[in-house]
Structure formats: structure tokens, C-alpha cells
Image 1 (cartoon, chains in turn green, blue):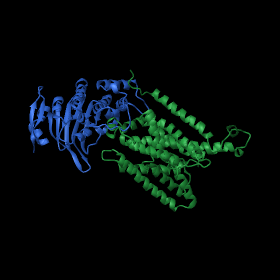
Image 2: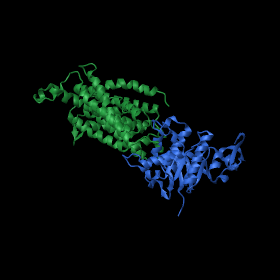
Image 3: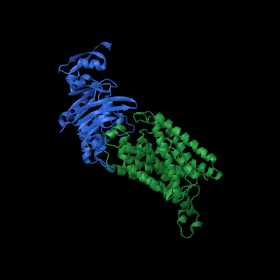
Image 4: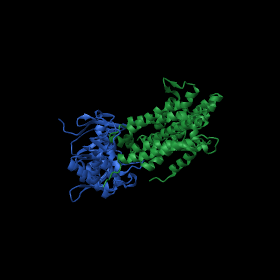
Length: 338
Length: 263
């Protein structure tokens, strides 16, 4: 009898299914939208690209938007899964902890200062958002931690709410002081949208996401053990303080990179790890990559809905995720605990 | 050469302003089975956390095999010493087998999965602790006594030389208490595992431990053979109650309160 059914082959199989779901999503969703596009025309070589309406819609509007949705969904989901393990609380997520607001503050500061898009090849707004996210995590962590190193739900959520209000007030202040065009840009961005993207910006944030994911995978077993208690993790040989720092920095990096482009899109980092955990279990070695693919697909699908629900008007995807996430959060809070 | 597996030299520890342990000096020899006893708040848990390497002493030295704890890497220390807390809160729905396999962490490098050997070690630990029959169940859904056995299985999987347990039996009924203590006794006798555990039940302590350390307000009040520590005057002084000492049929000491009178 095989008592331990937890082997690599099973994980590889599960991961293939998630990858397949992701592939199907990115193959189908570019064809859905308020305007019906003709694929044959879009790929036809008879028309110049500038005159080819179908190609323009496909390659300049829909595909970059879908890639941004994929990166955003993946990054927020990974960050959510990691924060839940580090804080040993399954209500933790970039949005509920105020990490997204911190990232937003960083990004808004960088935007209003009119910094150049990149300094020495490093994109400035995502880095500012990363620093904002890291500041928020540090704040919430030190506010919510008890003497024994626990993070009670009530204290954690209150710290998150406090951070959210605090950063939102600072964002409003900057917003109030900025001129009309800047102000419009900030408002649109704060609603959480995926519609202002070039391939160049996508390429500039991708490394931050893949580095964050790779490093977290490297420490995934340590993070599993930390989620069972800090002191017992030490006794199992985990360098708890080091892993906490790395985990928080990587979660901030992931959140900052995508919030800088898409705005603080709420609840993805809360919903996705929960759904995926129900499907694959809590082991981060499978939960992280599965959440990456599922989170990418999830946000692409939400965004597709946002594009067509009151077509031809497109609504910001943040509205869709919040309408799904609000009730989900309440359900999590009220569900019976075993 | 000193043969001690563990030495503490004048270790003290404070939480914020409050000092909970004062100048603790003790030696532990390989293969000992030591009970740490004392009233609530006497510093038992803190002492065990220090010995287990999960807290750092505020002052004094803590040596494992003659070398300071701080000179070991965490994973190195985890291959020799394991510490088991009193409670096991688990947020996520890990299965029993997954919890046991976490004990292999100090032997694995990053990006690796547990191999056949690790699984074999975990299986054997689960057989010894009689946890194998529910290895696929969710850790959060099993009983307190079962959880304690699962966590001990995880600790055995770590293959330590020294096992430190913080009141492993205090939340359990008599059947599970005996079961846990028997598992530890077997590890101690068959595999020369050194065991240090905090206990509340003085009768069980006298039955299972060859040596007792009696703490009073963060200081060692008595440290020695069970017979010498469990004396009427010691118990009365430290716990502040009048007691009788009774012997059971095996000659183990039982403590019975004299009256409801307290000092």
C-alpha cells in the first residue's frame, strides 16, 4: 500500500491540466470582444498593417491587454498565496493587507513627480510601486504581530484596513494637488484597468515577476513549514527570519510590478489561492505554479467579461473582481471553522 | 573530554522587562530521560524553547556536544535536536503524511522532493507511532492525541539525538498520556534517544523519568534523581500546598493533597 500519494508525477500531471486551461484561455479570449474580428484578414499579408483594422485590434489592443491580464493575475495570485503562508492566515492578500494601496501610493508618487520611464533600463513606476508595497507590508507586519509571533485575524485585518485608509489618503492628497490630465490618468489607473499597454512596458515588468516566482519556488518547502508555526519551523531547520524577509520582498516585488501598470485590482490574490488550494491542496510546491496559471486565466476571463458586459463600453476589470471578491471575502469570514 | 550531549552555562532569558529564567546551569548526558516539572509560570516552556534552539538565551552559553548552538546552521541543529510545542495550530489543510514528511526538511535541498528513502523513514515513524492508518486524513480533522502522535512521528522523521517536548500529555486523557509516554520510552530505550519533556502530572513523571528538574520562579530548585527531587518538603515549598507522598504498587511516588489548606 502506498501511504504517501504525494509524488512528483502527480504534481506534474496536475500542473499540465492547469497549463492546458491557461492555453485554452489565451487562445480563445482574443477572439471575443465588442467587434467581431476576422482572423484570416488579421493575418492577411495583402493589407499594410496600418490599414488592417482586424490586425490592429488583435495585435495592438487585445493581445497586449490579455498578456497584461495574465501577468497581473499570476503575480497577485502568487503574492496572495505567499502572504497567506507567511502570516498563517488565509484572509491575507495584497489587497486586504493594504499592500496594493502601498504599491499604488508608490506608483502615484512616481507618476506625479514626472520621473523618466526608466533609469538605467529599470522601469521607475514599478520600482516605486515595489517600494510602496514593501513599506506597507513592513507596517502591517509590525502592527499585527503579537509577542508570540502570531497574526490574529482581527488584528491583521484591522492593520490592513488602517494601512489602506492611510495610503488612500496620501494618494488622494497627491491626486488633489495634481493638474487635470495627471488627475484623469490617476483616476482611471486607480480603478484598475488593463487597457493602456504597449509590448515594451509588458517586457519591462516580466523579469520582476519571473524572478519573484522563481525565488519563491526555491523556498517553497520552507514556506510550507513556516505556515505550520514559526517556532516549530525553526526546530525543523528553517531559517525563519531570512525566509520571512525574502517572502515579503518577493510578494512586494510581484505586487508592485503589476499594480504599477494595472492599478490596485482587488481580491484576485485572495480568491485564486483559495480556489486552487481546494483543488490541489496546500503544498506551495504545487500551489504556487498552479495559482500562477489559474490566476492568469482567471483575470483574463474577468477582463473579457469587463470588455463585453456593456459593450461597446469597456469597464475597468477592478470593478468585476471587486464584485466577485466582496461576497467571497464575506463567505470566508463567516464560514464554519473546523 | 566532557561526555555531555547538552550543557547550559548560566543561561538567562527575559521577555521584554520580565526575567523568566535566571542563571540555569545543567548538563544532559546521552540517553537520559528527563522530566522538567514546576508550577505554572515557573519557566518550563521557556527553558525547553532555549534547549530546543527556538529561543536565544539573553545571557549565558548553550552548548550542544561542546559547541555553541549559534555555531550550528539551523539545518545542522535540526538533524540533532527537535522541539515539539504543546499545541499544533494548523491553518492550512495539510494531510497527516505531509506533516510527517516535513520532518525531512533538514536533509533536503531546495527544489527537491522527498525521495523513496525519506518516504520509508516517514512510513516507519508512522508505524511506530500508530499513525499510519490515518496518514491520508487532514491533520485538522484528527483528535488531540492523534495530533500529538503525528507530530512525534514528524520529529522521529527528523532523526534527532535529542527530543524536547513541551507538555506532550497535558491536554490528553489517561490512555493517550500513557500511549505517548510509552512511545517516548521506547525511543529512549531502543534507540538511545535523549528525551527532555515538561510535565504536570508528578505521578507519571516519577513513573517514566529517571531524572527530574524542578523549577521555581525561573530557577532550578532541585535537579537530580526522581526519588530525591519528589520529596514532600520540595513539593510543599515550590507548589505551596500540603501533600502526602504515597507509593503505588511499583514503588512510584504519588502525590496527594493533604487538605485544601494552602500556605
